[in-house]
Length: 354
Image 1 (cartoon, rainbow, N blue to C red):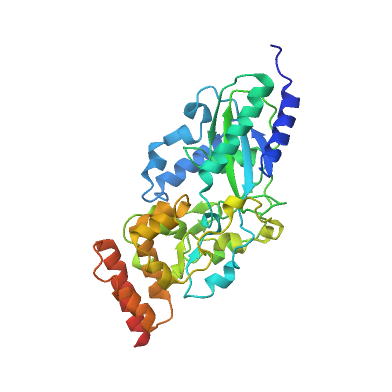
Image 2: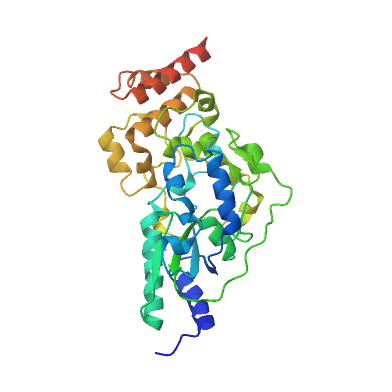
């Protein structure tokens, strides 16, 4: 077989990617030396909190060929996820009786969908040139996906550490194909944050401690999803009614005026989680939680974490007899973690009345 025309192949890969439902495809090299230094500094500062796997993976995250031997290029893909049918985010955040769930988690868990599409893209390439070396990822392994996407021209890393595309904002998922094909590399995206600091200023818990410096230990997304223990008391009130993740830094970003709604049916809102009553959600049994979050990212927090998060939100809700009754219903819960946060919420409700 003759050697492929890699310039033509790169063009075809980008076309196939869009046909498969990605909004954009770019191609990056594997040099991440500067990003590796930033990663090591972040880990040394302890900003990863309980996410010990971040430290265990070491430099495999910043050295693609160490993670998948033979990797020469990374095909980076992005896919819009903001569901078109979701309730207004600020409206939900402004109603303390409702539970706020991050926009990315309102529909189907994206990991399998993204990897399945990346596999189809790999199949297209195989059909065109024959077998080649590759491995697909979507937030599923130690990959510096934002740095790779930046180098592939998909956007720049904003001051909130989220990737921003000047034509599409930041409401999109990322996925990668590590490959041994010597494809031509795209031009990295340039930074367009300028002097704007809205994301830093709006963070409810001041987790963005500097431009592109996120202290996960203070981040509401980390606290409600990754952290499995007690939420620090000083961070509970600022959490408001955010029960799974937090979008404030993206909601205020001026570039999201260019964001587009998702066209993926799988990302549509499920079970009215775009603004359901906290009391209703707190009343879910474990069976109901497992049934209603089947195939969703919300499963990641676990049932205890779900009740913990909602208890905090109920503590922050306006005082009412209904809220107190709901909290009392969980006051003797078998989980010490749940009981602790319920007790805090009860006291907060009583203090508000006093």
